[in-house]
Image (cartoon, rainbow over all chains, first blue to last red; front, side, top):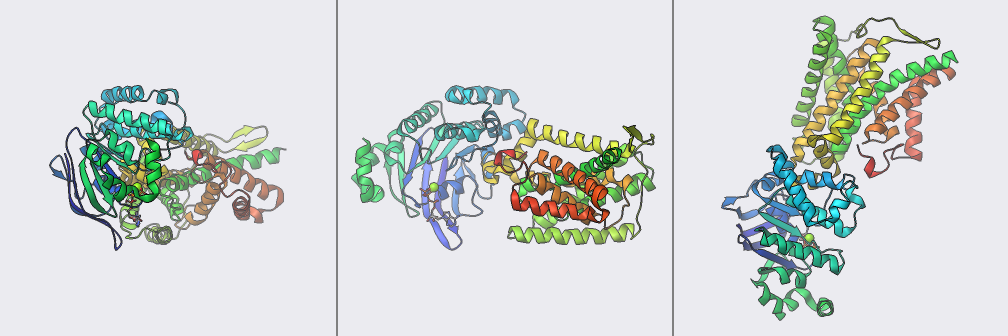
Length: 247
Length: 291
Ligand SMILES: Nc1ncnc2c1ncn2[C@@H]1O[C@H](COP(=O)(O)OP(=O)(O)OP(=O)(O)O)[C@@H](O)[C@H]1O
Ligand SMILES: [Mg+2]
């Protein structure tokens, strides 16, 4: 569905992605894990039209994404839940969700949008209670749900998430990952970027490990999860305790 | 007492105009973080287009009004497309200098097209002035106050109720967030330019019957509108209204009760005070106050 080949991204002269290839098949959950500064966000930004330029190939459903801007990529069916959520804090929860469907309102799909709004609110019932509150007053976890809900309102075929677990309590992380699994069952394809390898690999079909702009490991999620190499390559010494402690 | 009421009326009239100009500054600022120092020139274009379309060519007022808005907004669109959009490295200081350049350019073009003469227009309708508690209110003042209130209220509804208005607000909050939501942020910025210059044209038209219209009228009006916007809190619609009215009223009271030499000084004293004591403006301080 999404095929990235030999992707290279630059910030000025610095090369942040150094020739990455990966693929996401229809209906899969793919986890992309890596430490701080590995280039995970950069890779997602390239795929979502947020970088002014990149080299290599990115194809989505057989079409190249070269030269597509952010809104064009949303219309093609990729929605991003960005790092830091980027909701619209002063606007109401409902307005945030409705803006997620901006491209579909423009296509006059009002009835479908109304149905999806119900669907999203059923998925995250807390958003119903908060419907008229400014989004900025929500808790971190609720804001993350809102960001996911807003992305779903565009009715994407591929949902890309950038560290949705960041800053959330373990219980909330659990909840969000459960929701992703539920969405997968309903046919959504998911590309999940995480530092929290343990959690991300648990729900994934396959995984990639990114290190300083290169893929250093890839394979079945369960293999990766048990692979001590992961611990060495990505978690590092500092993380070892944290990693053991979580289970 | 009557005198004070009379000053109040004239203050409200001027204040309403400042408010409309301030709204133009604010709309553009909240969408782009840019202060358009050519905004006063768009107000001037509004006046002079009306002078030609209604005054000289005798096109019926409502049609001339709409045509003027269209012409000025089109100028705003061209301004964004050719002067702003094309900038390679859009750093704030570069953009501000471009708007200053544009103001000089527009003044020059207006001087070539309309000459250096000052024009005046009759009021929008010719009822006699209203007598209220011994003070008189010119009929054009009524037009000015009614049109500005309608405009601000209309814009409020636009931002609150329509998808495009909300998308503009979203773009103002974060271009990046709007972009990933599928909102064409570039188009929203263009729309902000078009609407803000269109609003500027309205200010120019309603003021035309109570002032002398000439190619260089925009500079001072622009500065007053800018002061009003800063006073109320730039980026806030109601702040612009409040700032405009407050500036107009204080100016009129200063002129009437103290000295007419104060007229243009009031705005700048207020500007300095507000920047010193409350740089966010009276109601624009909080992020949530944006429109
Ligand atoms: N705007 C930028 N300008 C210059 N360098 C950047 C920029 N954004 C990221 N980088 C650099 O590119 C590299 C990859 O950054 P990126 O944000 O993609 O990492 P990440 O894996 O998402 O990290 P994190 O886990 O902290 O989110 C880092 O070395 C970073 O310093
Ligand atoms: Mg990141």
